[in-house]
Length: 125
Image 1 (cartoon, helix red, strand yellow):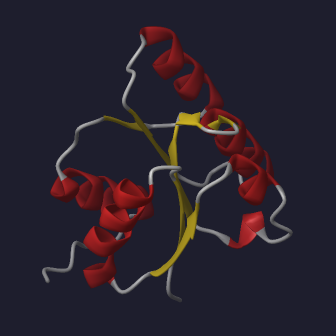
Image 2 (cartoon, rainbow, N blue to C red):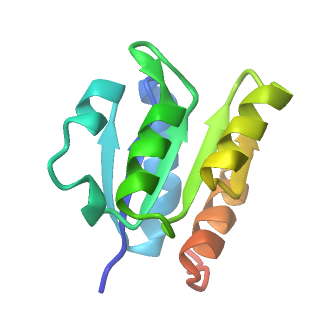
């Protein structure tokens, strides 16, 4: 089974970089720009990993994480943020988030975190 990964990031350049960095893993990657798009997905529970920014133009990415984890309590979530605050990380951890990356982050760190989250080996490009 090919893992399905959903990237929620409102900055197009960062979203595309993340998708490009994950491409060598040969996963099915879906990109979303808005919180409302993700919360409106009928098949949100079909994804195996959610990667979400915290601060989005139309809301808080932790709302997407909460909804995703409500549907799939044991699924992994990677939270990324450009405004690291202890309260944000604490909230994410209370939701069940184990992976938290502060911007700017190295793309190889994201790829390693995603592989670890999905319990899959890292494929070299």
